[in-house]
Amino acid sequence: MEVTIRTIGNSKGVVLPKPLLARAGLDGQATASLEVENGAIVLRKPAQTVVRAGWAAAAASVAAKESDTLLMGEFGNVDDTELTW
Image 1 (spheres, rainbow, N blue to C red):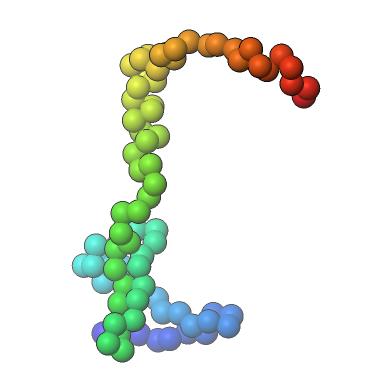
Image 2: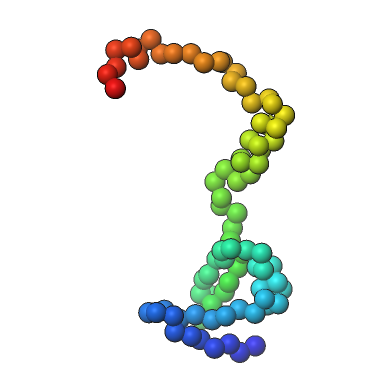
């Protein structure tokens, strides 16, 4: 498949057809990994590097079950009374 390399400001870009992205498993991705290997530009699914991935969904699940009460309860710090805010 041949594509046109277009000027975008000071950069260049190409439009990737949706069927091509689907074949590579990138049609639902918002980001991709881009590298040059042996003179070829290679586009891949990004590595799963999202820190704390799934934590928001897990917290929502715990809250929905109403099991998100504090384990130790609220407590003050006696040294806080000396602080000036």
